[in-house]
Image (cartoon, rainbow, N blue to C red; front, side, top):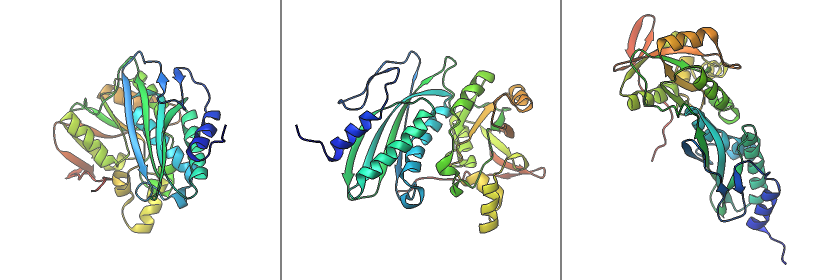
Length: 308
């Protein structure tokens, strides 16, 4: 029997490092994975990362890229207040140095996935003359309370956020921890009317909630928590730190809306360890505003958007 090389040697290497997991009947190596069906609604999300567009491999390194590829999908599951259950990964590798790159990617993905008990159950590898491309599809399961959608915000709701914003390009965009556990605790602690993870920027992502809920919102400028990184960027580029908090994106915090009673209680009691919940706005019947010094100005939904 010949010794496998290339793709097949990598698959053998990967299988030896993939532990058994509850709910996974057949993992990597067959034509499909075989999973036990969930008892509650199934959540499915996918994200693709492209070198040159989403990251610079020479700066980030493959381990961190692998971590991010998993974590951006975990953040989507968190936005639905779901439980992540499995992931499949497809990778397009550059022909030169592909094996070492693939191994480091896998180790980074496993590092992120293992932190939340998510098995990597299969996928595909290919090589080409272009840069690194990696796509992860993640499965999850809703809780008994059901998924939290972008639709559902109601006029009068408080708008809350799970952490400070802005300046993610200084490192947070690669090294963040998705708010999976925090979302589940919030879902148990309050009636979440709507929620989204902040991947494209606060103003743009909150606007997504408004679009889906057919409502408006006002953000309170003085109440938005701002990272030290945003202030560092502001000192460099002259843009206000608030502008970075509103539009930088890839914060991967959660923004959600709740009734005033739930909002007041959450801010007062701070029931979720490790984060500080802040009230940053209010849902309106219509309009999209920023309020500062007692005056409201129209707020543009700015942030990241793929262009083609």
